[in-house]
Length: 132
Image (cartoon, rainbow, N blue to C red; front, side, top):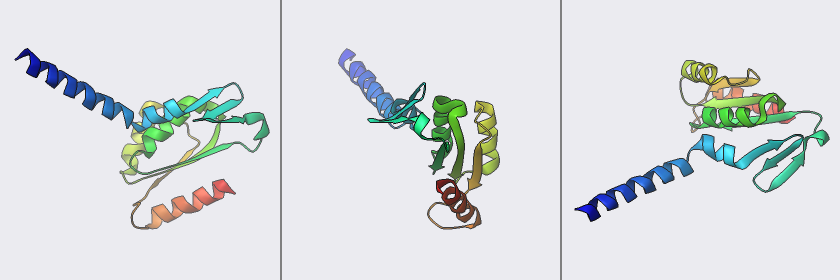
């Protein structure tokens, strides 16, 4: 029986590691770093002194809120503005963002990502505005 218990423990560890690997918040935290004016995203580095127009972000999908929270934790006041489009109820997204202290620089849209609707089209327009 000890061998079966060891297998169960190993399976739980593997499962937990898999969940951690796909956690969108943790993935952003692992991938994005800010050291002074040096922004690193994976293997690319950017000197923010060269980007005087600001830093803008777009987060889409079910994991949009957790990605935005992580990016906000990394960038803080350095983030100029962002757009979040999430299929979840917008009141829940806003409540969760306030609980986690997400910056007010984000605009919120409740979009259906597989089919265009009014909010997702508004989010697209806002995203294009940011990109300009």
